[in-house]
Image: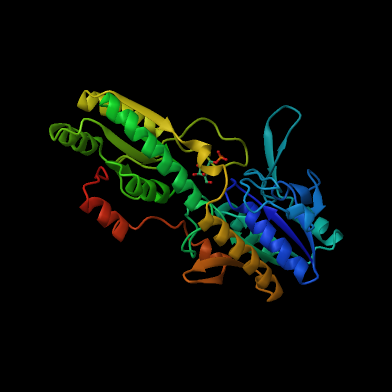
Length: 359
Ligand code: F6P
């Protein structure tokens, strides 16, 4: 058996732990393992396909990033190519990918990625590729799994930032607005905001009204709490408004969401007369060592992915359905992004202890 592993989309702490567990589990079965570099670019002739051995994965379990590198512009069904005049076109190169995989004697592929990579995997599966998936995203928005690896690390990074912002906000009687990742879902903002004792949390699932945010801040002032911490998911939306888009995205790339914190800080100042500052935590949330929780989950996913290959679970993704790792069809995971339930106990508890969602 010869399998190949690829990592696609934005990176997440724990990718290397998945790779390590999958490689060691596969080698233990006497299989050969290849690594496809930079998403699927390695299979398109635009990067390498390398052999993964015990030595290739030695010591990587604790490292952030991915030894295979990644890209969020690598769909073989819409592969970007620059024309001589500088403009871009997108080509369906999936047949080429499949032919190259066959030429290399690849029997099965393990793809580690979020919704984008999983939808590519589903289309490859429909074309006959033997493929299994491992869900990855710091945003925790993949359906069918209780959580994805990388999420816990991102939340820890965000909490550390909130803790640090508290001391400076309090010293200056300021409002500090922290923007965290979460295009479709507010899990990072919600979990970090509650754990870090934020005063306001704004998430895509609960449209906000800045009047309500300002009211909360004024109430705190009136009670002698002269500073406030607002945690905002990049994809949060004002009532009746649109998601905030930041800059241009490249061909083949999702639109870039963000830039909300700065606007909110300005509008809070206008409404409350208080000095406000903003910070975008950005890619710090994707970097660094995975937490113990993420390392364990990633390692479990890597081992389970190899078992899924052994069982011929093509078109399936490994998923955490506590306390077990199960496999579910890609189609179930792709039914729609997993989002925060506004009635979830975490939201209820946050409200009960006085956190405003700006609604
Ligand atoms: O990993 C998901 C995510 O973190 C989103 O929340 C964010 O919008 C996106 O990735 C940004 O990715 P990039 O800057 O790599 O395009």
